[in-house]
Amino acid sequence: MKHFFWLLLLCLFLYLPGQTNLPVFDRDEARFAQASKQMVETGDYVNINFQTQPRHKKPVGIYWLQTLSVNMTGTADQIWAYRLPSWLGAIVAVLGTMAIGTLLLTPEAGFLAGILLASTLLMGVEARMAKTDAVQLACLVLAQFALARVWMNTPARRNDLVFWAALGAGMLVKGPIVPMVCGLTALTLSVFRRSGEWLKPLVTKEGIALCLGITLPWLLVITLKTHGEFWVESVGRDLLAKAASGQEGHGAPPGYYLLTFFLTFWPWGPLAVPALWLALKQRNDTHVQFLLAWIIPGWLVFEFMPTKLLHYTLPVFPALALLLAHTLRLNKVTGALLFALLVVVALGVPLAPTAIFVLLAPEGGVGWTNAPLSILGLTSGLLLLGTALAAWQMREAKPHLAGLVFLGGLVNFYAVAFSQILPETDTLWVSRSAAQLVTPYRETCPGPVTSIGYAEPSLVFYLGTDTKLASDLELGQGCRLVLLEQRTATTFPPAAERLGSVSGFNYSKGNPVTLTLYRLN
Image 1: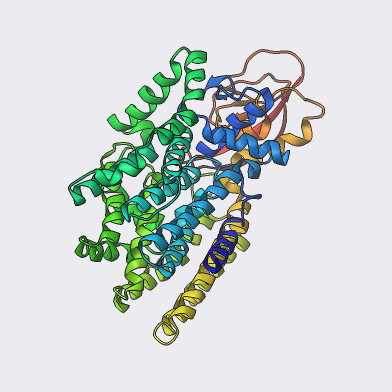
Image 2: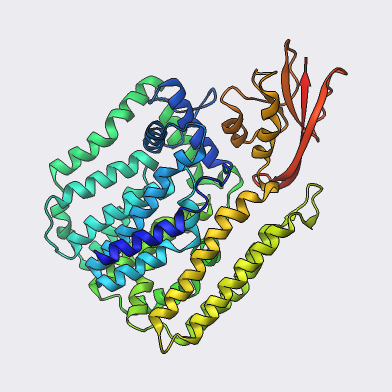
């Protein structure tokens, strides 16, 4: 129980900063949040739409969770209400990882694995984004916990229901990923054991019926309502397209995730690789076999999928954290490897805030756009470096205190980065700046705002569902507010009143952008 309490407290320290003041991220978070917002506005909880366009790439689970959160908090216009499911999903995934570690290894190893997973950079990001991945991870960890119980022959009442409920919830949140990872794990373990008989306790009529009861009702309704278009879009144009080629410009060759692993699993990446190597030497150990079966097949599938995004390998992170915790508990990670971690921290931490705060200027050049924030970022990075050095000095005499000191520095760095530096870096948040520019003029000109040449989804979330994303100026009557991207060759009437402009960097497209606000009467 004490491990549960301390790990929950750590998650609160790691994941709460920035939840309320981080602006809306483009593009996935903005699309998910806006679609959920429209469900609340219309009361239609079956169809998924972004403005007038159907959004059938993912099932409805995450939208239901977000609309539930919004209805409970009564804050449909605040992004933090849509992030609550991801925040809770990340915490459940961390605590579930600890439970798996306690079952497979020891309570101490499970607790350490929870700490390692919770403090990775990718988990910190996903816990703050209103999309599917953190909730999907929670479902996966629960399913793998049930699978681990069967693998270790641990008696548990209605373990089959836990397994199938987690599979059904995972499918309703993000389709086939949870069943795929669990299936590959079970298949690989059956190869290790040269039999699939051990899976029999999970294959029950009640469990399968529960899974179907979770997934089928909405699938049947959406199939009828869209005349099958949901399957054409979600399977044909999304899932199969990602498997066939790099979708939406996100293609990369195999090895991409191995190279980016040191960023996504930061700061523990340098230790996880040798931990995996040491685990391969223990592949006859039943406990280690489960973790290897979780990691290797799933990782290979993600590597050979043409479409690649940084967060796709998140489903194997709990197993990597468990393996690393296992090797650390056995003192298999040497001082040289700890020194490698220190080198990464020493180089990465001061450079990370520099990359964030030495921003691209509106003209495309590099400049110090906000000196106080730059200083804050570098100070936070250097403080983490100092705590790492202190931990290094006391590693032999007081290893637990050394770990606590380093973890404290890491918590401080995340808190400063997510709650202060990123939210205040206006250059990155063009839509927020545009909305702030528009707000004073909405009372006298209350109609829908038109944006020409700038069509990021976050602008719709900030300005309202009726925001018009256009490529040219349309004729109309009455007072209208129009945002014009400066590179757009649109001619305005001479009577158009210029009200102001905002500049920033559109990170979704990788180019600077300047929006000018006009009032047309």
